[in-house]
Length: 202
Image (tube, rainbow, N blue to C red; front, side, top):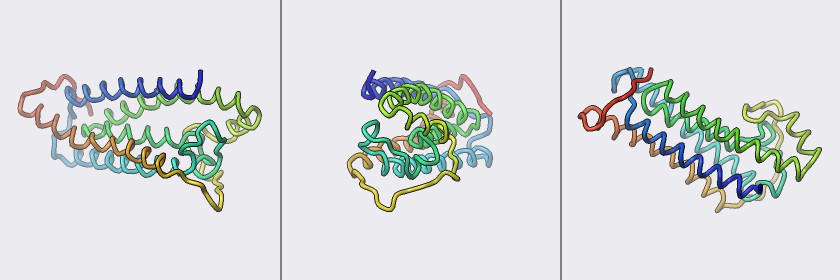
C-alpha cells in the first residue's frame, strides 16, 4: 500500500463521516434551548475550536506541505507531536459538532474524527518506518502521536514553503466553517416542524 492509497481511503472514510454528520445535524438537537446561555456558549467554544483548526492546519502545512513521506519532517509543530494536521482536524471536528449546542455532539464528532485519523496514522507509520527505519522509530519513541509536548519544541531558522499546498490546506479547513450556518438552518427547519428531532443531546 502506498501513501496515495492511504490518502484515498482517508478521503472516502471522511466523505462517509461528513454524510453521517449532516444526517446527525438534521435529526439531532440539544437539550438546551436555542438562544440560551449554555447553548450559545457551546456554539462559540466550537467556533473557536474551528478557527484554531484552520490556523493550526495552515501552520503545520508550512512545514510539511508537499513533503509528506518524501521528506522526514521533525521541526516546528512536528517536533512536539507527530501528527499536528490530524490533531487540529480532530479539534475542528469537535468544534463542528458543538454547533448543535451540545457538548456530547462535539465529543462524538471529535471521537469519530480521531478514529478515522488513528487508522490512517497506523498505515502512514508503517510506510515511514519502512522508509526511514531506526530514525523514524526513534522519533516515534520520543514524540507523541497526537497530544503535543511543548517541551520538545525545536525549529529551523529558515523554511522553504510551497504556497499552493498551504492554500489548499487552508481552504480544506475552511470547509468546517460551513457547520455554523448549517446548524442554524437545520435548527430552523426543526423548530418549524419540517424536520423531526429524533435525539436530544446534552
